[in-house]
Each structure stands twice: as structure tokens, then as C-alpha cells.
Image 1 (cartoon, helix red, strand yellow):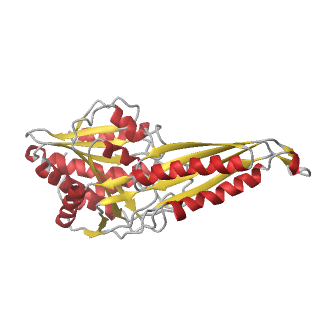
Image 2 (cartoon, one colour):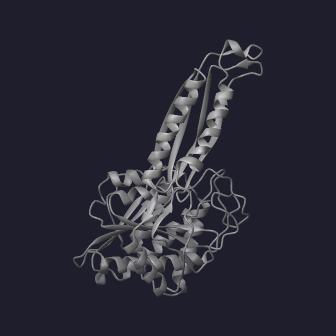
Image 3 (cartoon, one colour):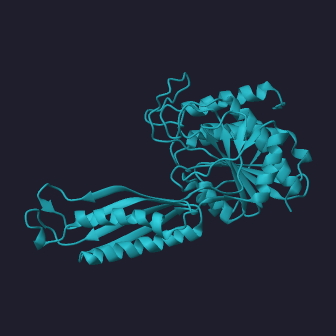
Length: 382
């Protein structure tokens, strides 16, 4: 199958995006999606590596000439959201939807693979394209890395659609782009009592309120005003009825940071505050701090190359604001240089919204950008 630089590529990619959109699958359930991707790549004579995972695909292009190994990555899983777009190709699976743009991510990288395959004999090295499962639960990247199939890669690039950016633009930023994601659980234990005689026990509701308020002081008083961080307590569970003070309370929430230093400082200070506040009320308090994903920090050299590729493919480069949303792409940067970009899609709504509709013209533009970027990396990576 030969794909030329014409509108036929865009039309084919849009058709395949709609096929994926109609049949979304959740994390680690992406079996039909995997089968479709394998079929499309095989039809284009793209070599498939033996990826020892139940879902996901790894295509390999190049290797005809000696050179570096670089990787492109896309995610493939959907969300447990009931679609409300009214599109003629809306999800046919009740309660599941590609509401985060992974269908567009997949077809963009599929298009890049087809374009690179046509130039395979001229590529100065090897491109590995990862169609990664389970991004939405933060597990897929680690599973891919554990296969060791990317151990020889020197750099990796990925993307996310950005509804607020217009089609024809790409957000490229050197340095911090997306936040590290942490999850905390705070357990409080004391003596329960009748609500009419609070002096005979411990009021864990009051203790919880003190802790929730104190946690906000970490960002405002323990971090530099130049640091960026978010601490959100999102759940509190305590008690079963209206006239009994409980003997246990649990708080849960998330922390978002852009540097490991800030992350460590928040974890330390959270432990101190909970221990001291609980002690002041003569109850026990324990913090369970779960680091779920590092921040994405883009390599400056890769960002420069991406700007060149954007200009070469007719995209306008914009400087995006960092976001406190997380992405498990960050795990790859622990092993190799990395770059993550935001692709403009002129969306009508935000990510993870049931009514999200995007402009499909972004697919072909993204495909050409990543094909050009891959060649830039092969030519300039040592």
C-alpha cells in the first residue's frame, strides 16, 4: 500500500479515527483496538515487534542505515464516559468514549508510521512507534518500559490534543509542561462518643477540618511564590449517623507539582502537619503518600528540533501554559530524552467532557509533523 502526500492520506486517517471512535475500549481492555492497529500497520508492511503485553502495538521502521533509535508514542485507551456529542460516528459502546482524544492520537501516529515507511530506505536509523495501553490509569508506560523493547531508544516524543488551541497550531515548550501526579490518604483514629457528650471522646470531624485547612498553607506559606503546586482534598469519610462522633475518619486527595524538589517538600510538610495536628487533639494520624507519576519536563534540544519540524510542515508554534493535568508519558523521560507537545484541534469543550468534538483536520497535520520530527531526530541525535 502506497500513501502519498495528498488529501487521500487525510481522508483515510479520518475514516480510521471514526472507526476507533465508534468502538472505544478501557485500559488493558483494548483488544479490538490492538487488532485494528496491527492490521493497518501490517497492510502497510510495517514490522511489528513482539510486544509481550495483551494489548498495545510496537511498530518498527527503518534500520536500513546505521543510526540512532528514536521512539514516537501514542496512547490507545478510552474513558468510562457516556458520549453526548450526537456525532454520526459516536461511540457504540454504552458508557465508554474517546473523550480524551486518544483516537486522534492513534491515527496521527498511524499516519506518521505510513509516511515514514515510504522513506524507510532513506532513514538514518530506526523509529519505534508505541501504541501504548492504559494511559488513563497511569500504568501503560511502565508496562511498556518493563518489556525492555525501548532500552536502545535515545529519545521519545508524544502528543496530546489541546481543545483550546486552533487547528494548525502546536504547543511546544522547553522545560516543565505537565504536572507530577500524587495521591494521598490520611487516616485519623480516636475514641468515638455520643454527639451530646463530646468531652467523653474525640471529635475527628473537627480534626479533619483543621487538617484540610492546614494543608492549604503548604502552598501559600511553605513554598516559594515562584513554585507551582496544587493540593486538593477531594473526599472525606467519617461517621454513619447524625448523633454519634466516629472513631475513624479518612481524607483523600491529590497533589500536583512540577519539580521533584517541590514534590518532596509537600510530602514532608504534609506528614508533619497531620502528625502535629492529630497529636494536639490526642488522636492518631497517618499519611499514605502515593507517588503516581512524575512531571513531564521537556528536553530543550528536542523542543528546538520540534519547532523546526513544525515550521517545515506549516504549523504555527505557540508557547503553551503548563497544566496541572498529569500524563504517564512522564515515565519514559526517566530512561531517555523526551518531548511532549500539545496539538491544536479547535475543540468545543474540555478534555474528559462527554460532548467533546474536535476538528479532524488536525490528524493529517499531526501525522506530517511527527514524521518530519522523527527524521529530524534521526539526523541530529548522537
